[in-house]
Length: 301
Image 1 (cartoon, rainbow, N blue to C red):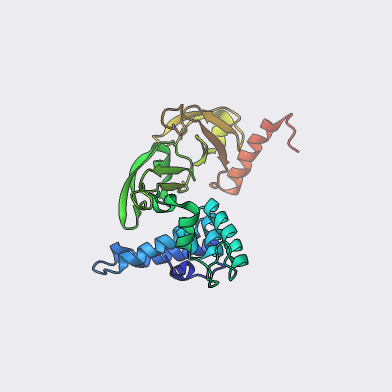
Image 2: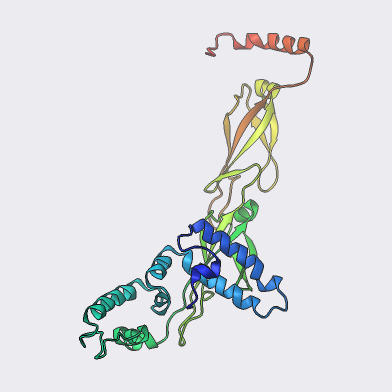
């Protein structure tokens, strides 16, 4: 790929990771073959975008590209080959015009293809494994907890993927052989799908444990009650003890996330006492007066 990768994405060479990501997403939405039916060039534009993003979104590959330009692709973005290339280039620059190592009698310097043949011999011409590719996929909170079979689109190709129950946000799933095709008969690289998990309106997560806030009334807190608590499966009953405090946490064992082949986590319930808003001033004053005696002997401040 000799075209400037930054130009393909439409960003400057000092663009941040977020700017590169936004540019790719914008371009991918515009040029995806699925939204350009009948446009023969859409697939090529989308592949060029994806190829540029695959390099520039990887800090190590981007650094090699910034240093070596198009030559970085010829050496496969391999750090070891890059170092040998640098050493060869320094020797070639030093001896250019003198017929020394890396130079010729007319002072010219061999191109990179000659270098690859010189440095790596048959290895440079033999089968080469394709590069790995990384993609992101967002799933719902519930699907991440329970597991789901879904699909991910790469280069206009749709691949089925199984999300295991209890997958952690940011965890990568490997699809073997679904990366960049190999060269000269070499195997294809792998596709790594990084899982992003959407937020839930009520539940929060810590590993396989869940937390949820449950509102209760003042009378329920005073004398105790049995209240309904939501879970990812179906609501369950929770016995609130008499004298429950605002912010008190209670644990429901085994009602959290159950990763495949492992014990389920717990559900932690935070009690939130809701003060009444109804009634007139006299009714509220009478209720407050009736409760004053309940604080006898208790240090509040």
